[in-house]
Length: 367
Ligand code: GDD
Ligand code: MG
Image (tube, rainbow, N blue to C red; front, side, top):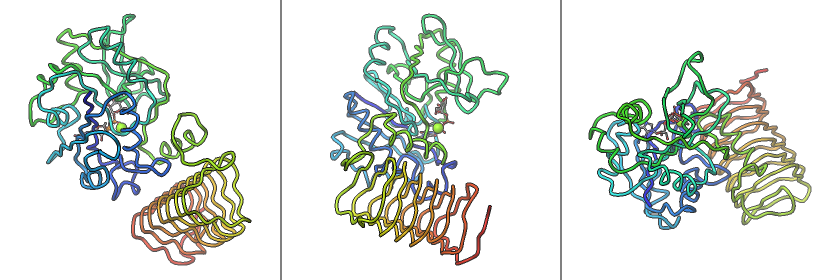
């Protein structure tokens, strides 16, 4: 079965993590998000996968290639300028000859796609839309439906007073081929604001598929941290690596000093070095080739690849991108790639540090 993943967004709210990396490639517990997503799709027999891309397409293509390593067939469709969600699918697949799945490329979920497809067929719907409950629907597309789960209304990014339901479009659709015929080729066109409301107006059957499966959009640093907490706490099933004892997963070729200690769920990638007296408290993920110096303390943090935490540094609730070095106290900071923060600094208050910056000794003290 065919599936199209929409990966055209720039991921602005996740900057500086997405300054150089498209959002779908940010690591989720040491594995690019998109690889995890493709694994989930493959579990339901969706192996003919098209990526509808715009921003930094080469970074995705270089890593995933033709999909053979993931056991799927990947093809790529690149827009010169954004075509919107429906326009992007139209460009990516042209004309469909069978039912097709469409996915927003920034959602981690364990939705049962097989059950959704069965419901879609049973209802002989033109489109089925997965729904999920959220606390604040104003950031999403609210979907209203009747007792037969027939969708009656879409309100994209409603104002607070317009909110009549906390069930929102969860970003997974099943579409029948003919609906794409309504999308003008080469024009900016959105499912949420144009195609779905048009289909409703034309009296077509659109099926609401609400569920209480795990669902999170990974688009902000807070959500990104939350995904890691959830995966490490086992709230959603994911392969974390090779377990060593309880609450610790250790990759290949790691060098862990015997005086280092681990508390709570901690995942180490390959070739990670942990120095004497270091304390790593979970939920924490440390990426391939990274190191934590002597007596350093890392708590509730996500370190990407080749990150160095200096001797005695204290890093708590931080996200640190590839090739960066932190030798100071950092609390709740998001640090881009290839940054150096020397000792004698204090990073605080959700500070975001852009890639390639060097913060010299004793220059920053917040909090
Ligand atoms: N190829 C391509 N081209 N992809 C696009 C384009 C485009 O022009 N515009 C958006 N996308 C991709 C994004 O990369 C993302 O994966 C997905 O389409 C949705 O776009 P977002 O920009 O993330 O939209 P949103 O989060 O504000 O709202 C959407 O998702 C919500 C669920 O998270 C809507 O579908 C809402 O209705 C929904 O509730
Ligand atoms: Mg989104």
